[in-house]
Length: 284
Image (tube, rainbow, N blue to C red; front, side, top):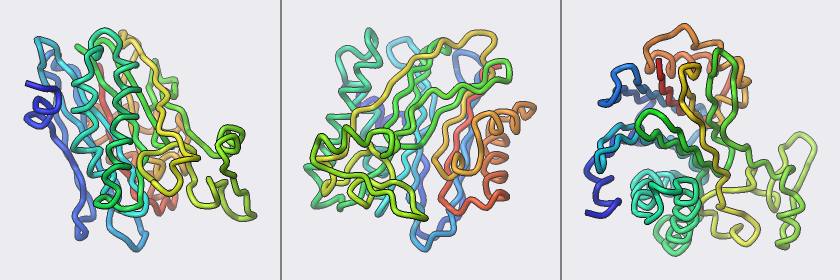
């Protein structure tokens, strides 16, 4: 059975219909009852359908347990986010070096999936999506990859550590310009690739692809006794809350779903108007 077939049999996913306003769920590890996950999504105030999707699931594969967690924040529609929800982890799991070199498998799968999205742009449209993924291997190792500005933040003894990289156009201006693109910086607006997109890396966005990378940054964190939890969330949360504020706001909340919901509620109270999706995985 291929990685994609395995994943299609096991995934739990959450996305929105045009009439949805929120979605939630939770679960726990089969390997360790102390490891739990919970997720919550909330549609923002923008006058379009919810564009966020996520995957949050534990499963046993080849006598190993994998926790598969991802946030996909679409723009100009949700078709690319939906595609990533259905296909990205399947592409990662089928990589021949997945178990030996997980970070490399993530890099290869991200770029091959983006190639598939571009080839299917006639059906998927001209939009795109950011992504942050985290794979927990046997409760001991967390491998994170991302493109765009959705973020993964780990709490270790109450101290926030960002595991992903915010791919901001201003930070990658030289790379974008070397490809023939430009970064706008108009008064009252954020920097944008070719005056359009507010992130320097993303899936899809065929019209910008010559100037836009889909290569992820990756990192691996060891889950020891000092690691308490990890937060994955779209930028609707991080626009209004620092990493440390997010950690401190949920550190005392033991239920993972309640923690994810608390973060979204706090972001809304701080006037975030964007779609927000959040996953919390607790280790102790």
